[in-house]
Image 1 (cartoon, rainbow, N blue to C red):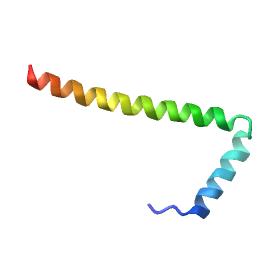
Image 2 (image 1 turned 60 degrees about the vertical axis):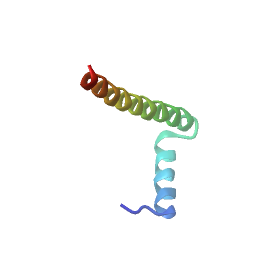
Image 3 (image 1 turned 120 degrees about the horizontal axis):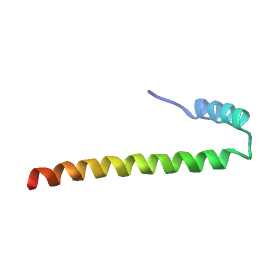
Length: 55
């Protein structure tokens, strides 16, 4: 899926209209935390699988 700069600007404008400028930083922060937790869970699951195989 190729998304260009024009499409990103339109998506950002729609999100800005829906959420408002005041809530946008809060939503971005929450999204970043969710992505970090998801990545941490993936790494933890992968590490747990490797340690089970070694025992």
